[in-house]
Length: 146
Image (spheres, rainbow, N blue to C red):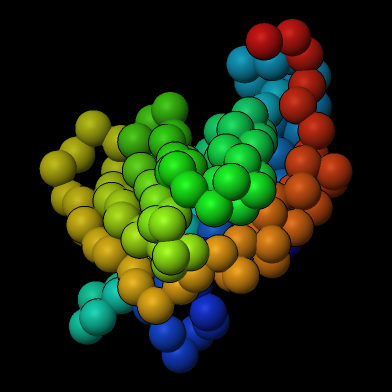
């Protein structure tokens, strides 16, 4: 499953591939909700490939915030990972244009990071992103109790 933030491989983008649960046998909240989710970033002359682990509830919260941004055509949505693999903010301006800024790290606790911005998107790009996040939630629902 893929979550694309941007317009595709020939443009600046962030691609999160959700491969499956990290601990498939676990059904509790803390261990069962980790997803193997490598992140690829292409922006300007830079690329980054990070073997990340994101949590189901992080993606769910990002989806809910994006839905609000889309409905109101204002505000921001942030994907913030517990282990600091990615920090990504999508901000919607009154004109409907989006500003996307973020940071990816190649290893939690290390200082190697890539700061990036993605331009040229607007609110019409949000439904496909929301749909991808919904598909991930349907395939990998939150396990256990928060």
